[in-house]
Image (cartoon, rainbow, N blue to C red; front, top):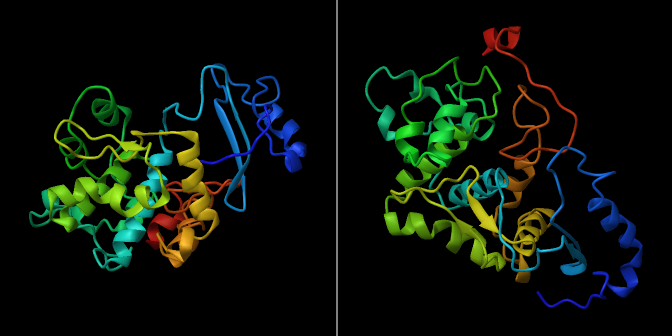
Length: 281
């Protein structure tokens, strides 16, 4: 948080970044969609902020809802849980308690399916909107949806898949207080993300697909953690290096532009269930 920047938001030796920030805030050349604006831009080099600029009315203490960046935070927490032995493998079945009755086909869903948006579960705007805007609790919304297609045969971007990962983690932790502290103790606070809050529903369940509020600097910390392959100050490995590597690679043949709840910033496509791949699975 200690910076030495000029009034233009640039470190002296990084003046060349000025036009980069100019473009980021120029709605003519960047963010042309109606209503899309840049509120903050930060550049880090060697752990130091060398460029930082905010839209008028915003600043270092302004909070933002991260929306689906929260999914990537959930992916990081999943890797931490695996390192701690709470999960054995991404190919382990998630074992959602609400699906434990004999013959429930959802028992075939694994963590890999959820992390790669290939659970095969029904996912529509109504059930997610009911959580986000209607006050429905997370677990009653996400554990009552049926399968549309067999797990692993369809890629479909689904908030519910992420929320089910967190439901499974809560069950593995087996302690409500530890569950509520887990994101802060294991990920956020070790990075100094003290201005970040993960929202819960009215029953105290994280809405870990979108409802995280943070600042630009805190979000930059999270990005810098992944740039450093999960390692933080003093050489502390916050997220396992192997997990980071797997997270940011195409993790399913169904979509080569998506990892474990990370978009890979590359052209991609996804394969629909009607293709031969479904039969191969």
